[in-house]
Length: 407
Image (cartoon, rainbow, N blue to C red; front, top):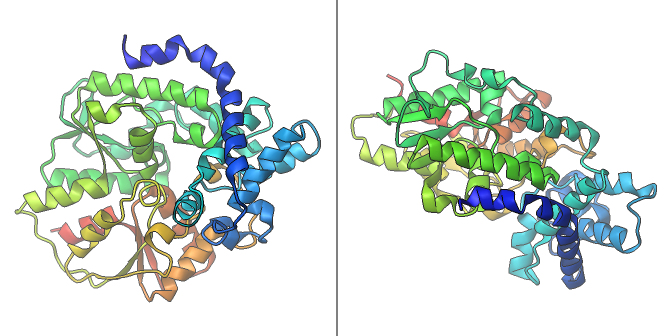
C-alpha cells in the first residue's frame, strides 16, 4: 500500500484525534516550561508589540494551556486567545533559544498545536485567514485565483509542462510567485536563469499549494489533502529533483512530507544555483557596485540552517560588498509575514518589516537581498511605507544573479 493510501485509510480517525494530540502537546510543553524568559528577546513579538508577557513565546504557551485547563474556550476570552496565538510568526527563534539556554522545549510545536485546537473548536483562525483556508479548499491556492491562471507568469518563456513532458528537474513555483502580479518577475527571472544555465527543467501544469498556509493556521486535515495531491503529481511527473523558490515550500516538503526526500532530491534554489554556477563555465558575471545586506528568511535559516549558500551566491557576484545586519543568521529578525500573517493584519506597535528595514539601513547597505517571496513583499512594503526608495532597494538573490549575468 502506498503512503498516501495509508494516510487516507486512517484519515477520519486521525482527524477525530487531532485535538487530543494537540492538547497533549500543549500540556507537556507547559508543564516543562521554567518561565525563564530567555525566549523573550529573540521573539519578533518582543520587538513589535507592547511587550506584555502574553505576547511572548512562553506567554502564548501558558495562555493556551490555562485556557484548556480552566475551560476558557467558550467564554469571552476565546477571541482574545485567538488574537494572541495568531500573532506568532512561527519563526522558530524561541525553539533555538530554548535549546541553547534552557530546557529545549518544542515551544513552536505547542503554539501550533494550540492553533489546531482553536480551529477544531471553530474559534480560529482569524476572520481574514478563514478566506485563505476556504480558497485553498476550493482552488488549491490561498489567494482565490482560478487554477488555470497559475502559469500566466510564464508566458513566452521556455519550460517543459509536466507531466505531459518529461524532465529530471521540477521548478516548484509556489502560489505567491504564480498569482501575485508584482512577483511574476521573480518567477520569470528564475526561469530565465535556468535557461541561461542550460538546465533541463519543467513546471507542473496542475500545481497546487504545498500546504504550508493550512498547516501554519491549524488545518492539519486540509494540509494532508494537499500533501497527497502533490505527492501523486510528483510521482506522475517522474522528476528526480524538486527546486523551490519559496523557503516555505522547501521547508514543507523536507520536514512535513514523510520520506519525500527518499524519493526525490529537494532543494531551495539558493542550494541549487551554487552547484550550477561552479559547473557552468560559459556564464560570465559582470561587476555590480552594490553594498548588500542579506535578510535570512526564517524558513530557510532558523528552520533549516541554510545560512551560508545564499551568502556564497552573493559573494560569487563581482563587485558586491556583503555586510551583515546586527541581527543575522540564528538571531535574524523575522519580516513579519510567516505563520499565516500574510493573510491578516495583526496588532503591532511597530511593524516588524519596518524594524528590519531600519536594521538594513543601519548596516549601511544600499540593497537588502532576500530569497523568499513573502520576505520580498514585506520588505518592499516597508521601503514604500518609510519612503526610502532613494536610499535602499529590495532585490531577490535571483534578480542579482540575473543582472550580473545579463549580456
